[in-house]
Length: 418
Ligand SMILES: Nc1ccn([C@@H]2O[C@H](COP(=O)(O)OP(=O)(O)OP(=O)(O)O)[C@@H](O)[C@H]2O)c(=O)n1
Ligand SMILES: O=C(CO)[C@H](O)[C@H](O)COP(=O)(O)O
Image 1 (tube, rainbow, N blue to C red):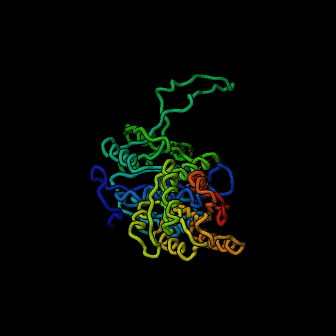
Image 2 (cartoon, rainbow, N blue to C red):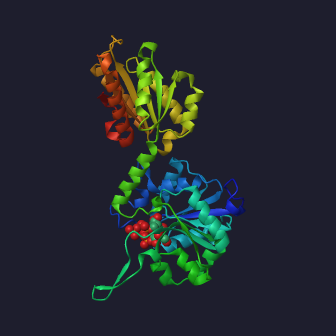
């Protein structure tokens, strides 16, 4: 069978990946295994799958899940449009799950369709969502040369051993040891051989694939320094940390779209200027209905925050056009998009007034767009004294930043006043 990935892998080898996701997440607690817990609305496992999937030279991605979660995993693949993924039934321990994942490349009877055996296989826990191509590429190159490789991090705490009486027996010299993280990569034949040879004790109690390669194939893995965010989601606090890292990543860029008359354009200029001290700003002045190419470029550049400055009453019609463009782009499929409708209540805009009807309209609109993973908020910039314009705009920028950073789905449809 032809490999499904595209592009040349480092060192020209063929590469596939196995993501063990068959655990129950006891240490995290709760009814849902951690790999299926929602982070910014999307299951954690989908982040790890996405991280592998966007590396074009990885041919196949095997996700190993417990039998009762096979359908859940298939639904996730379908919902988030994951490609090149094969779901495989896991075992009762992590090693047994990984072994099952490897068998799909080697044993006909294990899978209805045997995947092409890669020269190098990556093993990466499905609960480590932040893995970049750079480190994956480094472990693959090192595995090609040394037979096995894995990411490491410095130890945070000193490792100590306790004696039978519960007292300190000895401690290890921290500087000599490292924490073994993921991703790891192996010449396929080496790791497969190691799993075939290893004992039930290894399969049931072992925690380290690199160790199996050493013990059974005499392969000394190359250790590659990894980045801090390779850590494994293990406890509840790790889910909170993952959530805030994602929110932080999504808050790097905003697109300010102004669609105002010249007399009001001052705000359209001052607002981006004020935001610039906190976030990268793309400011454009367009009629959204034109499906502007400039806007398209920004969207395809993975911008997850939009501010629309309007001089009319709640211009839902025009905002709907932006929502349609975003939806078509698939941008909100993977992460929630923040869309802030800014309206101006300023001296030149005499006709402006807000009634209950307006508030209901924006709420209704926000509820609909939330179903598309687009979070809509309203912001009214209100000032009567032109001398206070800069101050008011600064306060509006602060509210916009708070909405972007928080991405709070409970606040959608609310009208805030700056
Ligand atoms: N039988 C198992 C056990 C674990 N894993 C996977 O191995 C990775 C790392 O293991 P760990 O953090 O220990 O996950 P759990 O076993 O789910 O956690 P806990 O030990 O707290 O129950 C996770 O992606 C987990 O789903 C697996 O595929 N099959
Ligand atoms: O860090 C690792 C390197 O091999 C593994 O992810 C880790 O050992 C998994 O162990 P556990 O299932 O006990 O959490």
